[in-house]
Image (cartoon, rainbow, N blue to C red; front, side, top):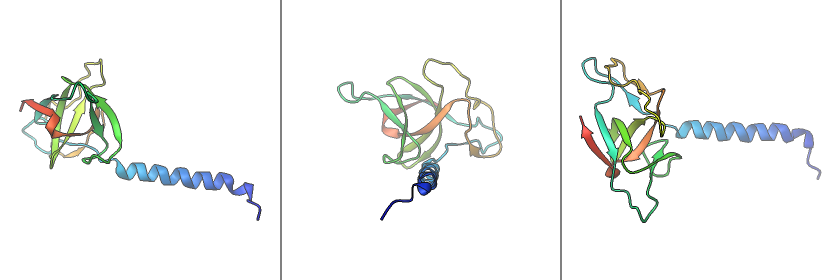
Length: 134
């Protein structure tokens, strides 16, 4: 039986659509705000206790689970803004390495909503984050 090559673009499009929808389902945005009196995110943290003889980085994940996609890697001493907690996972926001971008979270936001920028966001395991303020 011969493969109908005319269907190849259709098959490729279906595979790409499935992959994109699977990725979108695995992305769990960090939520910010929800209180008219306090900052959009209540705490500041710092990455700590990484093994210098091991990987020496903390993976930022697309959701609160070690099986979620790795979005970024943070080094010891990196400052983060802690916006939510789910079990042992923290939803964080942080500027890109080497920048001092204001992430826009130091004022109240009445409505709770997904963080959309300008900084990066994701999920990290709480055992490697020290709360330094808040």
